[in-house]
Amino acid sequence: MPEPRRTPQARTATVTRTERITPHMIRVWLTGDELAGFGAGEFSDHYVKLCFPQDGVEYPSPLDMAVVRRDMPRALWPRVRTYTVRSWDPRTLELAIDFVHHGDEGIAGPWADRARPGDTLTMLGPGGAYLPDPAAGWHLLIGDESALPAIGASLERLPLGAQARVFIEVSGPEEEQKLATDGLAEIVWVHRGGAVVGERLVETVRAAVPAFPAGDLQAFVHGEANFVKEFRRLLKLELGVPMERLSISGYWRRGADEDGWQSSKAEWNRRVEEEEAALVAR
Image 1: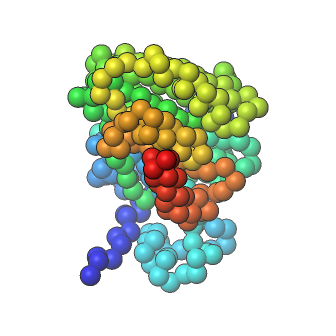
Image 2: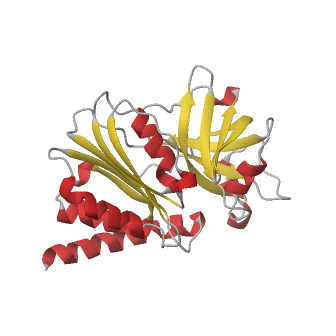
């Protein structure tokens, strides 16, 4: 008999400060005693599930999502949004999370824009699975704004002198960030302009493939699901990179909020695998 699904511990942290890193990226620093034993650090793509309460709804205090899911109708559950841990300091219990902000669109971005010292935020996690392998011949990191925090954290974890090719799509030059690394990283910023998300990113990476280094490749590719699917085919089917050397998944999908994407992601992934199998069988 399978074990019941465990609900991650909910932790509430307090905002200490915020900073607008670029016109559309806000970094929020949080701390608090409940972050003791938070457990981030093993991976560079750690993420948390942020819980945003609905107005007028009373929840258990402290928040217990197992109780919420058991006793409350789904329509009243807190809205949950997934975000990458940009940095974590276990000594000071200081956690930083980067939010993309486009006006009043969405839930988390507007919250970050309004956040002030003393505000609180409840989260579940952390999860995570990727860390640059020191034994890899070279590293490939690809993503859009949603993957930029994880790419930045991963570059900071590259071994000294490790080779990396990095391709990041943002809306324009004003959204570029300074990214620190001890590796030998060639960073290419792709400006989307008015194009569809990922379109110019795919074109840029495909044009760069002939100049890719030789040797064992480890890749981290995340962002909008449609372009991630294109890169999965490129790396897995065309370049023959083994799946165990790929951290590749859609963080979001055009036309769907996180609730819709998470509910359809398993079916999406199943269809992607079927399409790949059909291509191999031709």
